[in-house]
Length: 188
Image 1: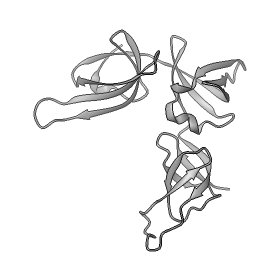
Image 2: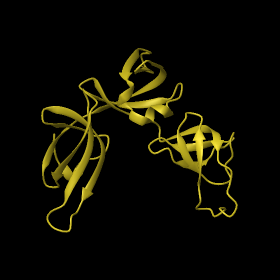
Image 3: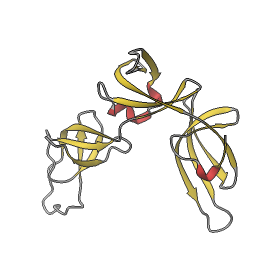
Image 4: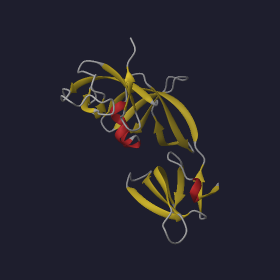
């Protein structure tokens, strides 16, 4: 299906130069002179290589239609993620690099959404938020008590994030899976 380049969004799968790419990021750039263009960071589905491509906003690209299917994450086996189909209980193996840095947020029995093109997995979405424990948090620096000043902390999955000064090691917090940013203290 053809679509204008300015309609490209992260998570879509496009065909370019005879290869399939998953869109990671897109940005419309309007230079002072000339027409606007869109810069797209994308990953080759076969090789995993990343590249940046630019199109004029009026250019068209071939968008591949994806089918969404929910799976339950079971475990990681080397470089593959083992997922279970909740309807048939069949196990499927998907390369872990399809998830990129988000693989750190996988939790046992987590429901994930896999995008398929002609039955092949091309992308995977995590739930928007996960609850994790803080294993390290810097002490509050005296005088840095303004609500806008965040301090570095390390989560139980090894990911570093910034948290408000009142958050201490041992607390559980909710974080966004797309950018590992603090959302709120976990309830209960």
